[in-house]
Structures are given as structure tokens and as C-alpha cells.
Length: 224
Image (cartoon, helix red, strand yellow):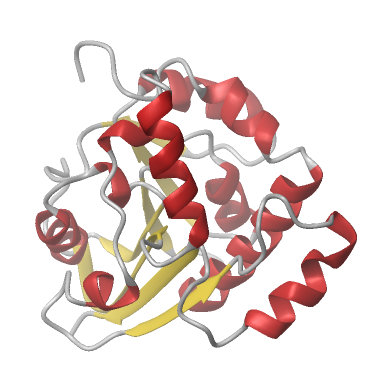
């Protein structure tokens, strides 16, 4: 990719947020949900589209998968490469809506919190399906328009001219399911708020399970 991309200045700041008390808990529940739907296993070839700093990519590698991390921002990928250590993965700079791969080459494809920065979600999801083998799964996670987190992010973007959320497309669970013409499984996570007492986050999350207003939505489809 050429030219400056949206998240080129964000790698360190992005990772640093996940080191905060609430950020660690957010990551815990997001990871639990994505891993439960994707179920990466040893030897599988997985595409992580919008892999960013590699936080999720590394978890797929830890479970023995062979992973290709793709992102529009080379700065994000370079940061991920510096952290990869004993779990290296192939990195590709490309647009998620035009994947540089042949049809049906991946056992599974996954995208975590990248779709909200793409206007044409159906095109992006169609590309994930195209490069996935028949019988494989496609997992897409994004930010939930029904969540109080989305409301606050939108309000903050009005005040902050440099906010990345000025160019964001929040979607509901129903809208995310509709991104593919196949039935899928949809679940949400992160039912607590940023302002909640860190000691209460696990309890709040347990009580919110099964609701549709979690800040994080994930859908799993099986390619026929």
C-alpha cells in the first residue's frame, strides 16, 4: 500500500491501552469469544485480515496454526513483527476488500476490529469467503452500534478532530450477520463500561452474557 494509512501512528498507543486494567479485561473476553468461534488448531493455514499489532495473531500461532497477518498499515505490521519473537508469522500489506490471494487457499479466515473502518462490509466479507476453502470457517468481529461504547466513541469523535472514530461504521449484530448470504452464529462480549470499577468487570460481564449490547460482536460462518 502507498500513502499514509489511518493507523500508521497508532501501534504503540494501541498496545498500551490493552495494558490498562480495563483494557486487559476487554482483551480477555474478546480473545475468549474469537478463539471459541475460530478454534485454531495445529497446522491450519489461517488468514488474519486487519491483524494490526498482532495481538490476536499471536494467539492463533500459539495454538499451532500457520498464520498470515494482513493489514493496510505497514507501521502496524512492523510493530507486530518486532513483537513476534518465537511465534513469527507471514505479513502482507494489502486492502481487506481486495485480498491478494487465490480462491480457497486458507483453512480459516478471521478479522478482528477492522470491519468498522470499511464502508462496504459485504465486499470485505465476500473476499474472506473467496479465499477460504469449502468447509472452512469465516469469523468476523467488530464494534457494536448498540453498545454504550459506540455512543461514547461517536460523541468523542465530534470533539476530537483527530479521532480515528470520525471515519467509522458501527454495526449491530443483525447488520453483521447480513454481511454474508449464509446463516451464521453471532455473539457479543464486553458488557461492562470503561468507567466501571475494575474489580466488578468480571461480574458485570457474566451478568451481561447472552445480551446484544456488548461492545464487541463476533459472527462465525461456515463456507459451504
